[in-house]
Length: 381
Ligand SMILES: *Cc1c(COP(=O)(O)O)cnc(C)c1O
Image (cartoon, rainbow, N blue to C red; front, top):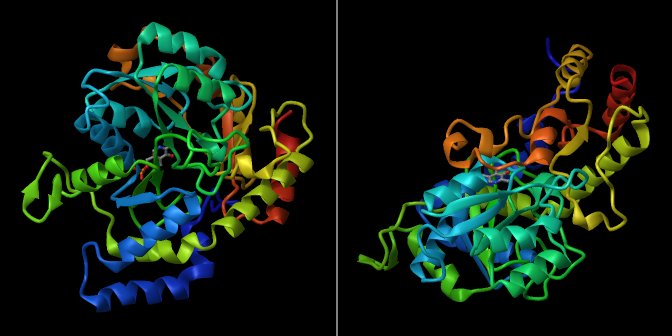
């Protein structure tokens, strides 16, 4: 049965931009320039301006963006193979994989039940105990994961701070970053972006980017993403091929202009859910008074873990498609079980069993949200 309220329809998401996207694709096809070039450069300038940083480097995807940042810090002598990197237990597995693939060791930290992001009250003791050299903060579900405690601990212990900004493009922090700026992607030393098609701004294929205030890091990432080459046929690193495709850069130049409208729609739908879901058996995500600190990549509710799957089935039968982000925390995945089994991360483990993501993408209207909320009130009780 086709759901009345699909979780996300990517064709719907791109409907307002289809003509412009087709023109932009033709522009690249007709240009004869299929690697790098003006589309990529102009996209990088647009992203740097939006993020309020001096440097942006387009890369192939979000996982590579993270891995290239970490590898660049190793090449620059600021991290060493085997160094520990703190990472929230509630994130997409890519955050963990990037650390492992760079030859570093992930140290998971538990999350706060309300924000579902890093519980910074645990940070200092974990840094001391693990002797971690870096922290990846993940703005999960679009909510900024940045506060005074994080800034203090990072400064005091000289941590390299990397933002995983895959889910929070266009968000702004109420606490200033290490360079005095507020957009996510400008808060720490470097940031990774994903433009996977389901993100708030999605390409029409894989795409990613790195932003930073540090010109040396930007150059190292750029070289690493292009065979380790700083100029033609001169290789300073044993690099990778992880360049941003110019067709995707052209798609993103069209869509990036509309980030505030896209995020505004998500905020409206989040407010509508919070105003219309009244059942006491749902824990709603917190809405803060400063709307910029969450760009609502996902709208994630919490329910009783023993009933979560029944609720989802009943919602599905009533035409509401939902999802789980994410059903298994990284440290419990088969690939990490042996390495990370000694960690005790009760909040992340509890969330994995009690969360449900509701439709909040561009194809869901606020009227849909009101209707979905009524169905939720009827089913989750
Ligand atoms: C999507 C995502 C990534 C990975 O991005 P890809 O472009 O799919 O490689 C990394 N971290 C988080 C939090 C994500 O949501």
